[in-house]
Length: 238
Image (cartoon, rainbow, N blue to C red; front, side, top):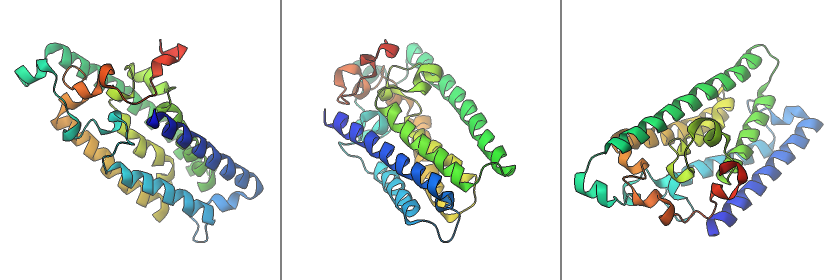
């Protein structure tokens, strides 16, 4: 229940940030140019908020859902079946293949989507300001996904929920990709932390896939879920 309150609060906060920046854009779009040396103070505040969020992800805590922390050794509770064999069963391997196929579909879609923004920037149709707004859309969308409506789950991953999501911690890198189109200290600093975080996630998945599979890890099963935001309560997830 606490996580539900926290996640709902984060969603409201991110919507508020996006709306404020959207209004600033309509009044004076130059203020959202994060590549400018004299950038608006609000841009620096957004950078600070995102950077703090990224850094806190490296620190395990009760306010992080198990889906975000399942790659960590301390969150691995082996099932009785896995405890006996200490290896993936045929059903586990099939589940892993399903997760990987979903991840590849998301990767292809996301590369294609952000390639559009890159082309528009190269053609000078988009500026840094528009890419910043796209990042804010991702910023809000990330929390919408975490609160139950995840198009990646419905269209690509086909997994049960965030607890078993193969790409849960891709969101940091996915968030900043529009900013990385523009060379700047602002974008590269966020990108560097996001890339490191994603590498940590992928390395653990490569070395310990059992931590990501509910057939092996009791911690991510429904009966042990403490998230408080079960997507099955929504009609589109049933």
